Image 1 (cartoon, rainbow, N blue to C red):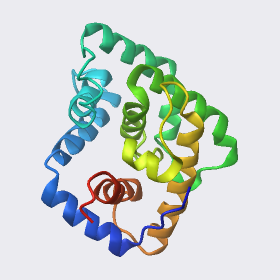
Image 2 (image 1 turned 90 degrees about the horizontal axis):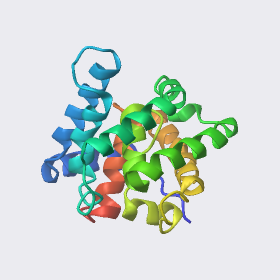
Image 3 (image 1 turned 180 degrees about the vertical axis):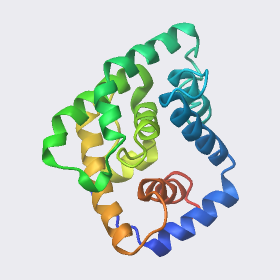
Length: 199
């Protein structure tokens, strides 16, 4: 699959286009804040409830035929607990620090999240938990970078490849003095270009 280079000019254009056309960005900002508060114990909301703010808006297609009920919350809580060592450590890292030694645990963690949340929900959740380390994708974005997604639980290799691409893209943006989280900028570009074809 081709590598898609993203310049600061392209990322800035995507940001303006995204803000103009995508009102759900508010949910991203809200969820990010709630997750930080939940992790630090400064809200009564559980981490799974904080994540639900975004999952039920950004990933609503996944829940068209699935209940987001107490049982699902319990599954998410168990997942967050079992994978805490991975995502909590990644929360302190940047995608630019990605190394070959990360491959095995990233694939394992992604598979665990994917089995509960699907491949799109897994990427979005991991990003919210470690927003400077894990990139976001949807099916259109994945197809542009790594090909069509496979069945649930089989996309760890594809996500790892996406991470390698994102690390290169983030390095390019930061070398051009991009202001902000490069992974959010990359996602906005990908979403505007591949998912919506706005740019």
